[in-house]
Amino acid sequence: MRTPTDSSVTPRFAATDRKATPLAAAVVALVTLLGACGGSSQTPAPAPAPVNPSGVVTNTSAPWPVKTREHLDLWLHGFAMLQPDTTRVPFFRRGYRDAMVVEKNRRGVTTLLDQNRDRLTARFAVNRNLVGAQFAALYFGSWEEMQRGIELFLQAQGDVGRARDPQQQQIIAFFAASFNSQADRDWLDLFAKSLADERDKFYHDYWINEERARGPVLAAVDSIWQKTYRPKLQTYLSRTQQESGDFILSLPLDGEGRTVSGGKRQNIVALTFPDTPADAIDAIYVFTHEALGTLTATAIADNITPAERREGLGDRMASAAAVRGGALLLQRAAPELADGYARYYLHAAGVPFAGGDAQAALAAAFPLDARVLDAIASQIKSVYAGI
Image (cartoon, rainbow, N blue to C red; front, side):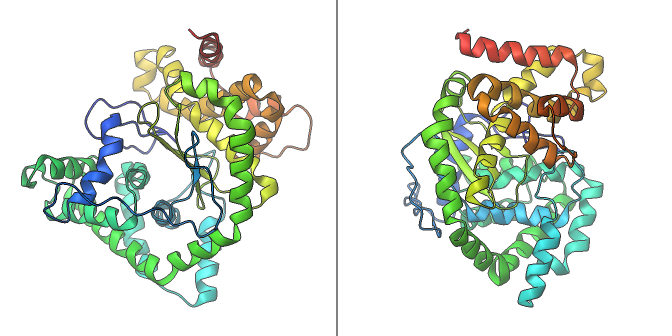
């Protein structure tokens, strides 16, 4: 899931966004700034090492290390419990909300997120851009850091003029890009408080237990990614300013990942956390889909007219372009995965596939203007030619 490149200091999120692309400096600096905003020191203490409840040790020095992040899953979990998800490739796992409701009922837990659901959900109908605020958690190192940033923003009432220094200005401007009205700030305040209660009463314990249970899955994903498929994709990644970054497995996500681009080495991609070791390849499929975002956005922009752009054609093409682009990339980099990728996205879109030509079925399920499809194929060819 990405957004077009934004030349401002902070990203703008929108309901049709597929990728958040801020300046590289903003990606690296924001968490450091947030670490400093709670006190007078300008040199915050180093962030603690991330918790890995699974006990699996991955190679964090390798390009694109495989990780997990509780606060990211919590943030996305909150959106999954509230917003309607009617996209062709769903934002979240199908049936996710129902499964979480069942789990909470089994534990006899009710939280502020449940109690405030109607009030929080209603805002999505008024401001559809709130959907894009899902990206916000990708810019933080922990839930505590995110809470401090939200608190600072709300105390300033979204006004960068109330900041004490340029660092606070950047934090306030970051949140103001998504929550620029008083009603939106009230929503964020209620959402953050509801999530904090959800975390304390339910989600932290749930997440720790799930991470431990999925340790073998994490190990399987890390193994096939670092030993086999990252090397096969590395030429493409290096030549498209995606040499390295964080490969984050996220419990709520399905076939649409969440991506922040921050230069060659500071990218973040959150994607589906497969259910079993046998399904580990699903994470590679979604990563490939996400890795095409900038290239497909360029292909669309270069091959539609200004009138078509104003009519929203580019936004409507974005999802199909990423899906079809991922298939084209795998046909070049790892052809043994191409049909499995097609079957995965057919399943994600709820399209029955009983067998036959998976690529033809994918093309039928995700039709794409020939101009754009040819441009994607041409750009992939150029990448591998070193042009």
